Amino acid sequence: MLVRRILIVEDVALVAMDLELQARDAGWDVMGPASRIAEALALIQHDTPDAALLDVQLGRELVTPVARALRARGVAIVFGSGHKACGMLPPDLQDTPCLDKPFTFADVERALAPMVASKASAA
Image (cartoon, rainbow, N blue to C red; front, side, top):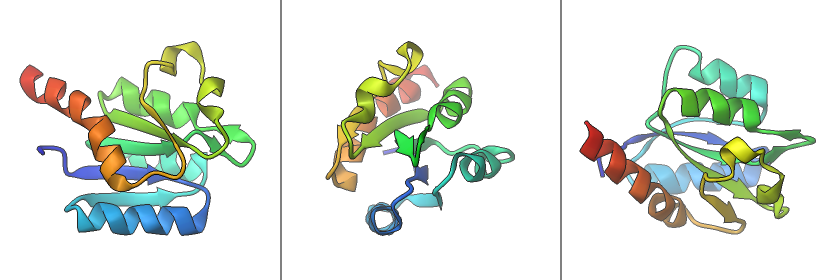
């Protein structure tokens, strides 16, 4: 896989740590994990990941601002949701893969694969 750097945004510390470990074990460089929207936006202000795993809902806020900023840069995104919140995404993000928790990082990689393949063929 050509993509090697991933931003993880997850507000449940234990889940974030587990996903970070799984990502590193799979050979990824991890940005974050970030637990708040402002923290995630600060991480991407000067550095763009190749891919992102975004928890749909951080506390009472949707991760939409982060997703839109990443999408504008052509970053492959996968959402994760523990509360069936995928349906809460606005229409412009409904086409983004969304995994229901619990999931593994291997599930994330499978969801990213089509986006990574199309990005590689476009390059």
